[in-house]
Length: 297
Image 1 (cartoon, one colour):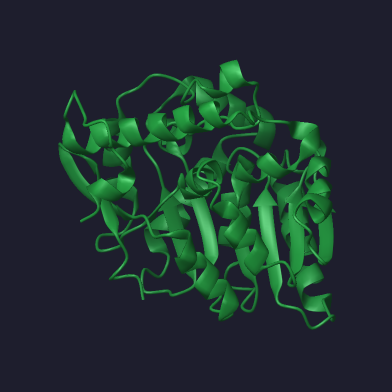
Image 2: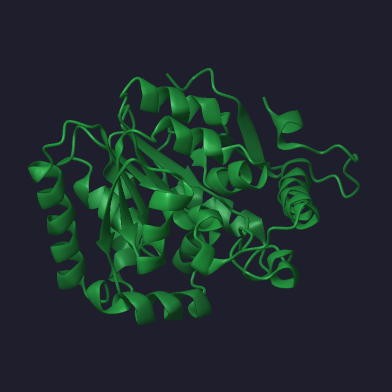
C-alpha cells in the first residue's frame, strides 16, 4: 500500500527516507474506511532521547516524569512493521508554531541543534526495514491550504476531538455534523495513572458509540501524550481512525489564533522546504523553487 508513495531523504549525510504522500492518500483511506492510526513524533522527542534537558524538563512538568519517553521508545522497537493500520511519522526539523502572532510564527523551530543527531536516533529506534511518514505533513498541508480536503472528507463521520477545550470550536469552523469532545486539562494527564484512565475513557467511548457513523479521533494532547495514547489503544480500537493531528488544527480554532497573513504562510512553507532541502542535499544555495516535491525519490 505504501511502497509507491513518494519519499524524501532527510539528510545528505544519512540517507534515511520517509514517506511524504499527497493529502489525497489519507483522504482515500478515510473514504474507503481503510483505518489508520497516525503516531507523530517530532524533533523534540528525538532530542529528548538524545539527552536534551530543556525539552525533557517540559515533559517532566507536563507528564509527571520522563518514563513516557521510554514507553514510546519501547513500543517503537517492537511494533508490527507490517501493520497496515499503524503509521509512525517522524521529523528531524522544528515545526512552525501556527498559533502564534505573525512575528513569532515566522520563526521556524524550537531550538538550534544538529538535525543529524535526531536522524541517527530515529534510525536506532525505528525497526530496520520500516519507512515512517513525515511528521510535519499536517502543518504543511495546512499552510498550503490543502488540509481542508481532509476535514471535508470526514465531515459526515463522527469526529471526536481529544484535547483542551478550544478544540470544541472545530465543530462549527469545520462544519462537522457529528462531533463529540473528550476534554483534557493539565491535571488529567500529568501522571501515568491519569493517562491510563484517559485511555480507558477513550476506549469506553469507542465501545459505546452507537450512531453508526465512522469514528475519527483527532488528538492534540500536548507533549507526546497523543503518541502514548495511540500506541496504547491501537490494538484495542480496530474500527476507528486515531490521528495525532497536533497543533495544525489550531488554524481552525478562533480562540487560539495563529498567523493568517498569506505572506506569513508563504514564509513558513518556504522555511520548512528550505530546511528540508538544505538537510537532504547539503546544498547551501538551494534553487529558488525548492519545493519538497522536487526532493521526491
